[in-house]
Length: 305
Image (cartoon, rainbow, N blue to C red; front, side):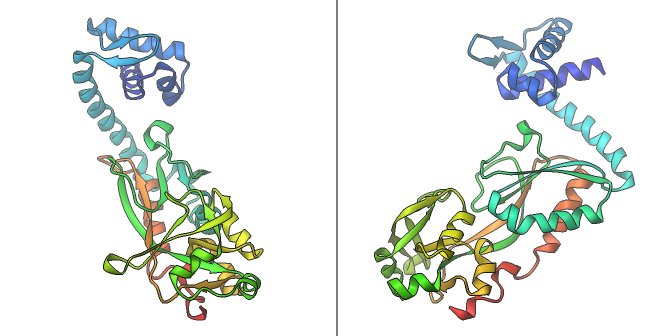
């Protein structure tokens, strides 16, 4: 087991290119991870890492060794997982999810999952930051929108429409925009999580219309944008899951219903593994079943706009 600890320490440092980050990943002190790597190099009689005050890099021997070390660790971890999983899903499941979707939609699902899988413990982090699943020790992440190319496995769970909406009081005061181009003359509530918060898109292909909007309120999150819209500060352009309750209750009115907006998707992503842990498989399957068909956040309000 000491040799396995050495290999795991070396792999963590090599992937992070840092003894400090590598130590954090394997859960030991910086001094201990340094000792484990040095012990491995002494036993092999070869230098695996080049160390400077600013960086850690692989030697040619270290690069070849890292490739085989990853295979060995993956096989060993898969062996342990396969034995543990014989009794069904169990253990700690660490999950990352975006803030607005997590609070409004995912929390009830998580509680239902926890009730049905009592042997699984949940550690859930809501953050709009794109976490590194492998380096930060997450088992699975729920992500919304276009996914970057990566080695992660992604399973599509549900579609999300972007809805344009405003409070009745705002529309009574400022008038109701009928066409996308009309939005340029209104107060927009901007979501800084968007790639370009001031550019709202309607239609696609030859029918695509891009509208440049302006507004004095900008928030890093859909929940705050929806709250500002309900308060009458302007028009929001937001994922449907963030505004569905307000739309159904009439606190917000859907706009531009005759113009199809962008559709984004909810995905579950997790690291590739030869043997997927039962707790991860059970959770992803649960979400896929939960969100199958037309999502709840699209129901009960579109016809009113």
